Amino acid sequence: MERESGAYCGGSSRNRIFHKIREAGSVSASRLSYELMLSRPTVKKCMDELLQAGFIYESGYIGNTGGRRAGAYSVAPGARAAIGIDLTRNHITVIAADLCGNLIYEKRVHREFALDDGYFRYLGQLVTEAVESRQIGPETVLGTGIVVPGLITEDHREIFYGKILDFTGLTVDEIGKYIPLACRLYNDADAGGYAEVSKREDMADAFYISLSNNIGGSILIDHKVYKGEGPRSGEVGHMTIVPDGRQCYCGQRGCFETYCNATVLADLYQGNLEQFFQHLESGDAACVSLWQEYLKDLALAVNNVRMLFDCKVILGGYVGAHMEPYLAELKELAANKNPFEGNADYLEVCRVKKEALALGGALPFIHELWKTI
Ligand SMILES: [Zn+2]
Image (tube, rainbow, N blue to C red; front, side, top):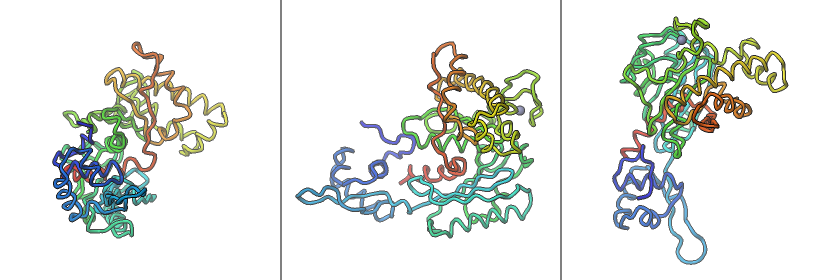
């Protein structure tokens, strides 16, 4: 049987039809019958149910050269939506994804994180504003994923390690107190990795490294985040790369975090990473020298990950978004450390350029629904 969206497919005939329509974009009933090897009456019955539920709609006709034209069906993207919120020290990003998993709403505001009622109330306002926007039908929203720089309990309800924003112990009930929807917490790197891999039918397994103001990592196996026992898996930021090296906020020394987080570069320009890359491009000597050191340390960590997992390694986060022009150089440095491979073609930069973390908070709601349609 041909490959269908394995990780998101529920298996029933109706579900297979839904996914085939979703993947094709626009498809006729006869093609569904042929490609899925289902009888015409079965296809008709399932499609009637999907139409009734509002998950698909008749989107036009297929074929225009003589004979009867067949009706074409597509997924109704507005049938459901989910909200994702990305919280950082200084910003809040709110996005919405539609039933197809596409970004349909985004808003980023500058607001310093604070552990107080005013901040939580503001989050509620931002979500309400998104839900009531013209892009979204309020009754279609499945839930809200709140993405934070912290480690989250397996039930997605509590931050059990939150040194970055000093919010250890904060629960989803407190943070989502004013959000009028079901809420869940997600770790930021896990959300970024999930968003990245869920867009890649050709890549079920990967290690995602988020290179933002902090470093996070996420292990994706068969399109799912591998959580570990803690759950603390993928915390590559606290891998020691220099024994007794620089002091890390975690209390240890020499963590990868302290050598390759984005502020290491941005601090050269008062925290402005864009300016760092502009000056790097124009060949500024101080930038070039810092960047060489940075790439060397990054290559070391990347190669360690490759040695452990032998899977694709995706670079995301603020620095990942700027990495494309320097990827060949980084690949060479990583390949030089590898005893088994002469290249580092396993290394890629992220493809989800816009709001990957917030999107990774919303997509699980959509994908869970996909399995049940
Ligand atoms: Zn550390």
